[in-house]
Image (cartoon, rainbow, N blue to C red; front, side):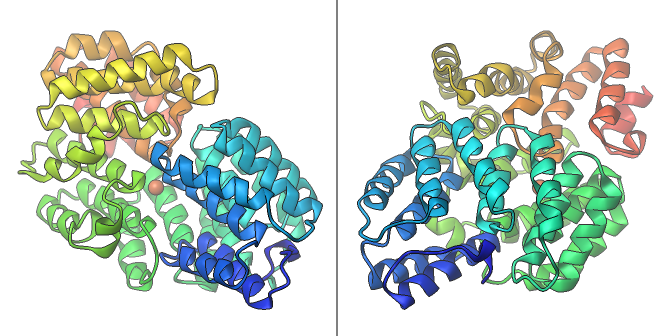
Amino acid sequence: MNNGDMQLSSESAEARDALAKAMHGMCLWKADFMNDIKTALGADPDFAMAHAVRALALTAGRHVRFLPMMRSGLEKAKAGAAPLSAHESAYIEALEHAVDLRPDLAIEVYKRILAEHPCDMFMHRLAQQELFNFGRKAEMYELAETAAPHWSSEMTDYPIFLSNRAFGNEEMLHYAEAERYGREAIERDPGDPWGAHAVAHVLVMQGRVEDGVNWLEGLCGNWAGKNQIVHHNWWHLCLFLLERGEHERILELFDTEVYNPASPLIQAMPDNVIDVTNVAALLLRLELRGVDVGERWQVVLEPAEGRIGNHAHPFTSAHAAIILAACGSFEQADELIRSMTDFADSDDGPFGVCMRKAALPAAKAAIAHRKGDHEAVVAGFMPGRLDLVAMGGSQAQRDVFFQILVDSCRQLGRKKELAQLAQDISAIGFEAVGQRTLYAEAFAA
Ligand SMILES: [Fe+2]
C-alpha cells in the first residue's frame, strides 16, 4: 500500500491496515471497499480517517440522500481521539467543503494535498472525479502531469496512477499519450477497469470501432468484484457495437450487463448515477437510430423521478429529463425543469452555474425533442451548445446531447446549423465524424 506513504492515525494496526486496503480498493473500483472501512471502524470506532474516507467516498453517490451520512462522518472524524497529521487534517478540511456542497472549495484542498503528496492515489482519484463533474478537464490533466515525475514503477498504486493519467490526457485530446499510459496500466494490472475505460475513450473518440470491440471484449473477463464502472465499460462496448449496427446484441447486453435489475449491484443501488446515465444515453442513441427498445425505459423511471428537487448532480438531472420524457411522464418532466430552474436561479455555488449554463438547456432540449418540437430544440440549445462541457461528464457522454441537436436540425433541414455542428463535433475531439452512424447521414444531407 503506498498511497503516498500516508500516515493513518489509529492505535489499532488492524484498523490501519483495513483502511489502507479500503482506500486502495476504492481507487480500483472494488465493489466491497466499504466493507473494509467497516472493518477499520469495528477495530477502532474513533478512527477519524476511516470516518472521513467513508464520507469522502460517498461524494461519488451524487445524491442528496448521502448528505446526512456525510455530515455524520464529518462530525465523527472531527471527534476522533488520535492526534492527526497535517495530511489527515486536510482530508477533514476538504470533507467540510464537500458536506457544504462546495466541491469547488474541496477541489482547492485536494490540489493543496496533491502538491505536498503527489503520490496520494486516493486523493488523485477524488480530485479527478470532482473535476470531471464540472468539466474541468485541463486541471484533471495538469494534476496528473504535475505529479508524474514523483511516481515510479515499483509503487503499488502506479498502475492506477497511469489509468488516471491516461484519462486526464484523453479528455484533453492527447490521444497517443492517453493510449500509451492506459495500455501500460492494463499490462501491469489487466483487472483495472479505469485503464480499460481510458483506452476505450481514446478509441471511441478516434472512431476505431474494431479496436474498441476487441479491446473491451478482451478485458471484460477481468472485472469480477468491481463496481458500477463495469456497467459503464459494457456501455462503452455498446457504443462501438452501435457503429457496427449490432442493435440486437446491444439490447442483449443492455439487459444482462449494462442494467440488469437482477444483478446484486443494481439491486443494492438502482439509482446509481453511472447506471442511470448509461441507460438514458444508450436507449436514446438506439432510438435515434430507429431501434424499438420496448419497455426498457421503465427500469430507470423511479431513479429519474428521484432527481426532481435533487440537484446534487446536474449531469444526471439532464439525463433524468431524457428518461421522464421517454416514459411519457411529461408532467414530472415539467416538474423537474421547474425545480432545476429554481435551483439555477437561486444557487450561487458551482452546482448552480453547472445547472444554468448546461444541464438546464440540455434537459429542456431533451424534452422538446421527445415532443417533436424541433424548433424549440434548435432555438433553445444551439446558442449555448458549447457550454455543455460545464455540466461535466466525458466528451463521449455529452455527445448524446449533440445527437439530439443534430437530429432536430436534420428533421428541420437546417443545413447551415448542420454544417456548424459537424465542425463543432470535430473540434470537440471526435475524429472520422463523417463515418459515424447518425452523423454520416445528417451531415451528408
Ligand atoms: Fe466513459
